[in-house]
Image (cartoon, rainbow, N blue to C red):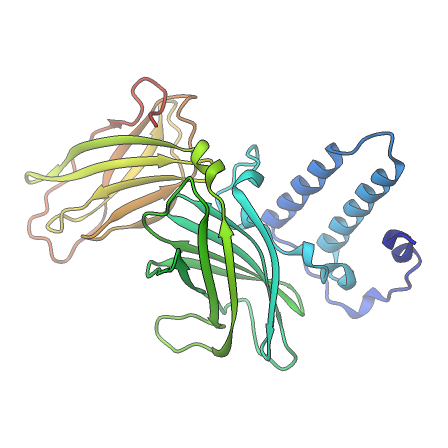
Length: 340
């Protein structure tokens, strides 16, 4: 008998569960996911329509109430990586994602690695954590994995987020920053989650038997859809000082600007502005003597021209007479098209 027929006859008491709304991002992700599935159905197959209808019921039930707890505990409910990026609703990120679905378990609970997505200079990870009975975990705790890429330990920064799905499940998002990811080939990653709360100012909650995952992530589709704009330009920022613009890497997932920051100047940031006047959203920025970069939402180099506008993002306490950044606009793609 079909699982959907079984569920239709199931007697469930939903009053014992707490109602909890999904975030707006989660709702949009579920809507896109369900509609995409429906569009793939063939009219001649009635069973496929029934399956699509059941998927709609599941999605609606989860968004309305976690009373559908038996459904919410099914692994496919795990958060999508789109929930943690500046996602363009028109873009299908499926070609750039790797579904994992592997689970590891210890006395602290069950950890499922849902899916990952490689981007220029970052790895985006979606996991589901189900704490064991008696384990105190909440959305303000942020696990971060130790990561090796092709056998090399990564020491870059990152971002974390924990989202409560229901009383027994959390979606965990991680963005791991890195340099020199070999785009265009399959990359090996070793992930170890050994702390339930990776904080800078405390030891967090160490896990003596970590959740460990070894995965391979292909990046050939990402390479085929990415463009590199070589800038190689010095930009004056006052008092004879300059910032050297190196390059901009544009992928379907993000736009990354790399530049050299002079330590004697104030901290310099850059806006990306289109010819029509639209400012591209800034996601993260890192300024250091070793490497400075800013990551933005993705842009379409073929659609219109873009410009970089430098500005003083914050004061550098070690700078003496840093000067003022003059008003200027630096063309990114003067002809309205990118350069690989």
